[in-house]
Image (cartoon, rainbow, N blue to C red; front, side, top):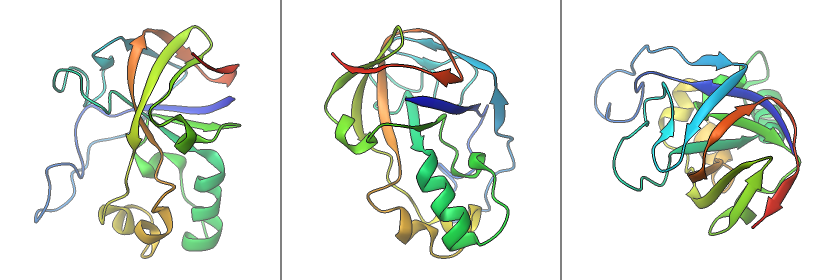
Length: 158
């Protein structure tokens, strides 16, 4: 598996904003992120959000990002637009739902699809929400923390 991009955001732009305008909190690209088992990513909006939260970290497929950019947006689009923490290639994210897996020395449990919401049509382009159904990414719990960096890693089921 290749980790292409790592992101954190200190606060919510869409979550909890139903019926209100989107927030304007930045998505910050990082060279490395610190993961704490059971809590999440240090500095991210979901760190210690609630006990055993299923979305302590989110993963997104780089190929899906490219498809949205090329087929829906048809122009410039940063991978950060999806507000997922880790953009990867080389693994089937949906197959990790309900699985324990390891990326390098870090360990996770895939909890659910990171289902797209109507905000994706605003963040990217109209039609993005529908396009992402079944391809929205992976929510996971962190079961063994440490530091995650970009680069190539072995993806291993535990």
